[in-house]
Image 1 (cartoon, rainbow, N blue to C red):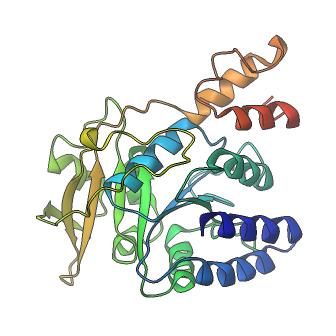
Image 2 (cartoon, rainbow, N blue to C red):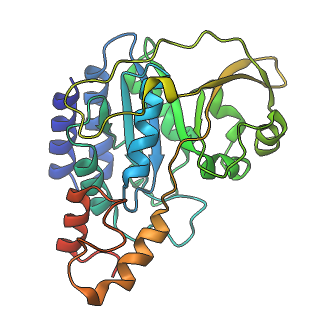
Length: 291
């Protein structure tokens, strides 16, 4: 199913670059057929500028810890909170993301957050509404994000509505204190939401699937903390935290390292080679990105 959907997405994007409306319409049709009833799907949006091993580590951990069937990597067209936009174009970021996740069981490319025909920014809430309609009511949809995005949540468009459409899965990073106190989490949330501990029964972790290019974090090392979010109307939604993942990679630092090494020849062997999958590093060099 993963390979079939990736191929469908690739053909859709390659054939409709100039018509974003057609891309999204045909993509939604493919999405509605690609996921079986009962699937657990996480939307993982971001610039992916470039996609790096940190993104892959977060997605693997979430897939194993929350029993996900699919993690959808969704490069964003225009982020409302990044006024200068992404450094690489949308087509390049889609191409790099496709390369980065190739061969990873349960990882898929999503065009749900493609540039809007109007040129307006992409809002996560609106994207998730379209995705919710595309995958059907029998699938469980989550919104996966890193701690950096979570700490900016108050600035998001109608952020308080998102977890009731797609519950949050938040992945921490080394040095971040997300798991130490519920007050730290509460402070990052919109004021309309209240967080409290929950006794949710978490799904059984998935066994590592054969064929992955890098193994997922060991099941015994994964910790999931479950909470419950409540709004003023009394609606509740689960909230999941993956604390203490050993991921300390910054896309902006990678871009800066590429610029610094521009005069040093090929990227291989430089300080940026480890954070990037080899195929992404080769794409960047071939297309002279971030220089």
